[in-house]
Length: 592
Image (cartoon, rainbow, N blue to C red):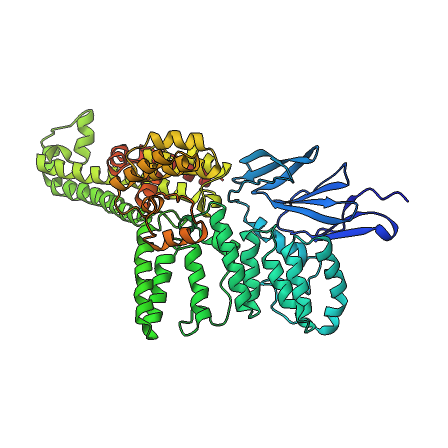
């Protein structure tokens, strides 16, 4: 009997099945679809009893003779096309900064020696795809919300068990299928449940995007040890993918990636698990939106509950976060605060100018009437001055008005500059605030939306380096010798290229410029000297460590230059480089 050609059939908007074989050898794979991630399904059958299935960023290789998944990989964006090339596959991966700005990269995958690049995505809904592949097929096992928040009856578990066992057998590389199987076994009181859960955590074809969600599942169900094990593996993978937690600053990125903390004792200093749960949040996003305030609140809470030593630790973390929380959607450093000050100054000085002119006009009105009675008529431009009685004003009064108007003028220019910086921050893709600058979307934003400054170029060099474009990164670093980060990160490139002596010299140069740079000291073989070098040493032993841009560098890049450069541009007042685009946007909004 001839085996049926493998086919992909979309059963509904929430389910898809892949079938093949015939008779007793017939097989079926089922996967759920995430309605909020309307990705186009990709399916290609090739010679050698192989087929490729792609959905959003996940790609599977299927042995169509046995009906078993033998390969599974996660691509950064959406898989929009698959082109077989013998035993290899060319994948077209699409990233986007909104509906009108899309980037496609062609990536070749060799299943025998797979290498899949990583960069953060701006399509955060893709993070939810893996759990929905199981949830839409077995909704009672994976209920909406945090998986595992209701009980499964023994009768229901018995009905689902054979289906889940077959799903795991046919796709052993999807951890959520094992999580579902373990949950059913737990409902039946089967001791194999713990082993199945452990296998889910150890699944080789997974990554931190799935495992953070798996750790939440275990926390919800009181499986604290399993939750910790899942978090540890996901956190290590987060580092190994080239991320730095200090660069994960957008709250939305954290909430979609890691979910909100779960567990009844979350943050409770009286329980080890409670302290561990909040420590995980800090490990993932120390300098994010609202973290200075959050860490200070927790320090106050600890102090009120008698944990003085822990309170001091978290108070120091709050201060550290306040100094370094530079690149968030709520503003950068003190940009938003300064904007409020300049808006206030511009308004007050403008009103002061009007009030001062009214006072002077009233002051010289009697003299104007006397001159009018004497028929001393003004003409031409003098008539305008006469209207405000300006020709009577003293030199000191004219200088005072000029000063007030100048303050209002420059303040309006500064408002435009600072509001532009806030808009540049707000218009950054979420991928730029997710732990790494790598990826075409972030690089395009840095290149096109930030004004050309040395600080912008430093951030762009880091983006090139994290994206794997080492030649471009090296060139930019060598053109920025004034930054310690340039020397340290250049040393990382050289070390990875086997140029150890040259790398050592660059690390030493970085320490000359910044004796407190812990990353350069670590790269020179010295022991970790702060929390983040300790984390890097733990999860990436033997690998050189990058230095992220400092908060002042990020602020300068977003502002488009130094303070002196900003004030020079602000002399143009409402016609400054920053005010003009804001004016156009306001007019466009009024028109719309």
